[in-house]
Image 1 (cartoon, rainbow, N blue to C red):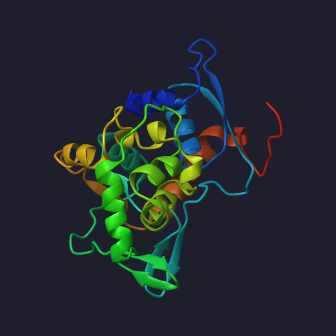
Image 2: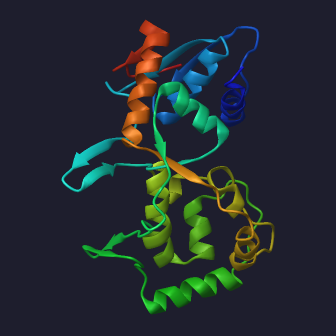
Length: 242
């Protein structure tokens, strides 16, 4: 059906596989990943139970209205894949393309907003790491250790960490490179600059954003799951054992 692409992605990210005979699944956590898993499996005919410890779904993703416009607490856009567009059409979420002139990004360092938070010395040190540090074969290496080797500590703290927290809401030490950013999982003996040169040749992926913010997508997805799952969408329930 229309959501086979989502369901395949869900099964690829699981530990183990979905039992095709039981046609039943319990999902723990109603962040955006848990809700999308429930949405996809429900569309394929599974009897889904979704359990969330908080009284609201969506995890870190929230949209706040401010005097200067909307402010996102986590992810602010999506890669414009056919599955994402189909999902938003189904939920009646209007998508817009980012403005080409709105490319400015800032990082807070020492209490000030800055376009580039590294000093000249830190920048040169980061280039040295990227040019000469070679990768080790380690499928379980954390992003923190990877960045220490290939970027240096300043670039890790003031460039990579804000980027990672904006996507995953966690610290680099909480992520495995090969899982979270597989294109950064370098072959044995490879330097970061060499890998980056190859990666830059690939076309940039188009991004889209909900016109009313990511919170609109989360709230409409939550409403749909409330309708579909009913009492099997259990919020405010802390799961202490499986």
